Length: 235
Ligand SMILES: C[S@@+](CC[C@H](N)C(=O)[O-])C[C@H]1O[C@@H](n2cnc3c(N)ncnc32)[C@H](O)[C@@H]1O
Image 1 (cartoon, protein in one colour):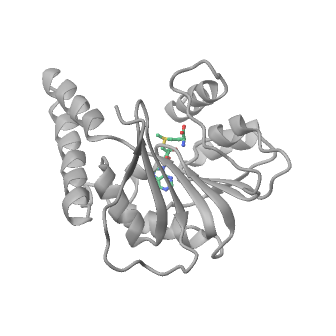
Image 2 (image 1 turned 90 degrees about the vertical axis):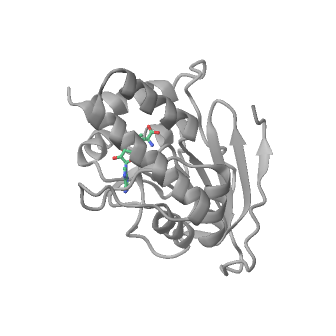
């Protein structure tokens, strides 16, 4: 079995098991009729949400193998091969956008701008992110194991996290075309969301790092960015 198939089947098993502490599903409301999952793999989050009756329900990913697996697993979901930074959908197509642990692998300002574009005004974005602590832990593990390449890559992810936090920018991995990866801070992601036209930004940081935000009704960027963060259940 390939790594992609194995990973996505394992994540599906987690998503389907209410007792699993690694399980995290977005809060879909009754008025969320059209739902897009970006970086959705084989659609595991959407499958576990059991969204029968809602339409369209779409999962986007770069990984063709994951999308093929998704097609085997579910008939009610449309699987589309595309980048989160360039979505092949019309403006205001969706009530809700989900992005579970996929934003860290994207060019964040481009991806959030696209998410904002395809959401209807008042539509909800729900995403999970990677913390600095998680990446720092991985860096340490690679250093202890003398895995120098892995350590350098984690250092690059941390530098991008710092750049997003302080200047709202991130850098491309110099050895691969179009590859970006970062960890996120509440301030950095709030700034990026504001710039992409989101309001009502809420950060939840406990065993998961979750952000929710609404697409601005005016669709105008707000003047005078204030990094106001609502933290729930901070530990
Ligand atoms: C950690 S996996 C998460 C998969 C799924 N959302 C889940 O929660 O199990 C990240 C996914 O994002 C996809 N991905 C990475 N960069 C992407 C991009 N720029 N555009 C779309 N998908 C991307 C990967 O192919 C992978 O399936």
